[in-house]
Each structure stands twice: as structure tokens, then as C-alpha cells.
Length: 314
Image 1 (spheres, rainbow, N blue to C red):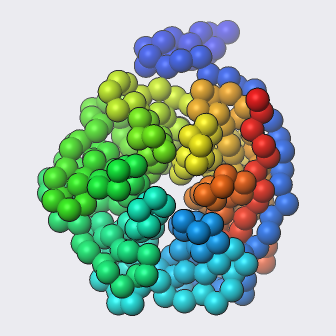
Image 2: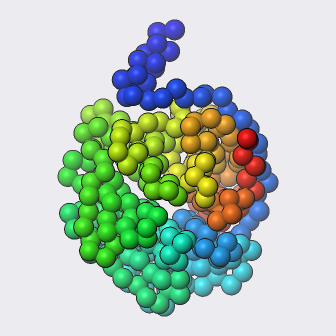
């Protein structure tokens, strides 16, 4: 009883709305997209046409190539005509504007910057970001296609979300490290909410295993979406639901794909923990998710997979 009371006091102190703790299990069969690779395929994102998928692959676990395939895993090839950096990761499409933002840097995520490419992969520009460190990652587009929200892991006081104008590089801090330490963001389709993985700053180092999923209004304080560990959020195209991964309920610390309504209701587990799912992303029509899953024969190999998403309850 005392621990439950303490939890409720903490919820009240953070200003978090009532959170449903009821979980639905609706495990979906996995359809593999990439096959045969002995590396790691990560950060898949479905392009505006609903069939093309960009993703990053590493064979040495330090440098990444930005590739493109389709939902059947056919004819994988480099997406860019010329690489602007040694390692290319964390691609995210602005589907209405047909542009891809991604992180480029050195080996092992050193000296990172945000880049933007057109749909052909030929016109690539580095975002001249000002006021951020060389550990800026995870761009997520604002609906206007003129700015992205990204996390700066090298910010002086701790990881911070910034909104960055892709043309001018002007940056604006959206979170305060003294209150929250943050990870990957995802901007809602209407631009009014930013989902992010993060944790209240309690004076200890940032640890992504303690992250939960929060919603940050354009003006207001963050609120938690669902009780329990969570990371890697992505908005459904209609803005009604979030996909994310969580290790809640798994003693081995493996992750499964979950979806939840934006108000915290209908928390649903869609994959089992054996797949150790990473970075789920919605298709443009909202009917399926692409993500990375651990290969059955080797725990250090991840390939792209997809699942069908159950229809939202009315």
C-alpha cells in the first residue's frame, strides 16, 4: 500500500493525467522484409509511396550505410548518390514534402549532424544547426517541412530536445534538462504534440532503460502516456495512436512492439519479446508497422520485419 501511495504522489507531483495500466495482448505474425544479412538493419522508415523503405545497415557495428528497399525486401541499394558522411543513421521522412532527414557522422556516432535529402537521394544538404553540439540525432519533421525536432545528447546540462530550422539552422530548446532528460522524439501529424522517450531528472545520469513515453505540448508541461518502460515512439498517421517499444514484463530485458491511444488507453502488445523489436514506424495508411527484429539464429543480427496493426477501437 505504501509503494502504491508513493507512486500516486509522484504522479501528482509531475502533473500527469490518470494513466490506464490495463494491457491488451494481440500478438501479430511477423513478415520478414530483409533476409540473409549477417549485420544489423535498423531505423526503417516507410516513404510517402507506402512501399519504399529507407533504413540503415552496419556490418562492423560502427559505420552505417543508408539503404532503400521495398516492403518485400527486393533490390536493396544505397539511397544516396554520394554519401556526405562516414556513417548514416536514423532516417525520417517528411511524407507531404517528400524529403528525408537523417543523422550523419563519424564512426560510432561521433561528430554527428542533421542532413536532408530529396526523394531521389541526389540533392543532399547539411543542416547548418546553430547552438547545438556535435551529438545531435533523431530528426523528426514538423508538419510544415521547414524544421525538425531532434535530441542533442551533448547539450551542456544534459540531453535536450531542439527545434531546428533546416534552412537557417536556427535552434530553439524545447525541454529543460534540469526537469527532464530526453531521448528520441516524434512530432504528431498536426504538430501540436511531441512524443519522446525520457525520464524526470532526479540527479542521476541518463539511462534509456528507465525511459517512459511522454507527450510534450507545444505550450505546456510533459505528461506520461503509459505507466512502464518505453522508448522509440512513432505517431500513427491519423495522430490517434503511438507505437513504441518496451521491455516491461520481460525479465531478460528484451523489447516488444506496443501501441497505445494518445490518451493512454488501449495499451496493446503486438509482438512477443523473442523478436527483441526495435524502432517501430507506421506505414502511411496506418495499417502496418515496420521495425527491426532479432534473427532467430543469431542474437547480434537484426533484420527488417513488418506486422499488421489491429484496427483502433471506436
